[in-house]
Image (cartoon, rainbow, N blue to C red; front, top):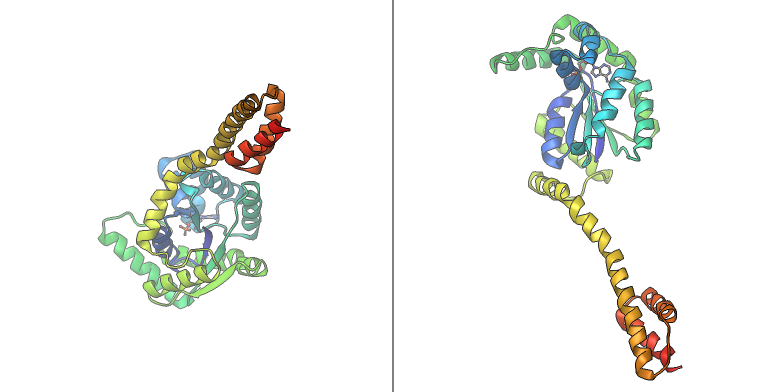
Length: 284
Ligand code: AMP
């Protein structure tokens, strides 16, 4: 399952993304998190992004598109992902469409968390207080001034995506003012209605499914290889069978003839059919 979570800062995207990760065994791809990690590590991307992020601006499209494209190729994203904080502009959404097309991946849904703007500031204040309580480093862009700028950039640059995805029939809007559990439930129901998740998916079965699918590729590959192997085996056996049958009836059948007969028989499906056909031929 591949989905996008859309919503202004403080709308609960991060919280809901973590719940979806638990429930469906997919990964959360947050450009904000990745950029903060790059800043902390002092990478070239981090150096480019540091000032822009601190002031509440947007990092250039090509930087975030590159990060996301690489991240989607990682093995843990094969089972599906939630994009949190990306795309943030229409050009980013167009770039995402292109890269998904190239990777032959389909976007299942775009979930918009709609919130009352007046609640956002107090939500971010609560987040800051909780982070301080846990002894975590507080984000430099979680101040009232920077938040105001981030909100303005959401309105002017990101909100047009609502129209973009609604035109493409991908958009589901959820009331983000409900309690956290209710929002999670509403998202789940939307995903069900869109056919993006299997009915009765819950945390345990999703976790099981996730471990199964990580094991699956090898199994599936073996299984997929089986029919070819079997066909090869059956083919060889059928050639031998055809020659044997010919011997019995005293008629000379060369390897070529037997192979031809056998091939036809294998096409028909079973070993039994192979014997029948070759016997008939041999009799004639
Ligand atoms: P977030 O954690 O999503 O609130 O992002 C924090 C900051 O990272 C934003 O204010 C931007 O400066 C930067 N950022 C994150 N995602 C993007 C994006 N898709 N495009 C441009 N800048 C981004």
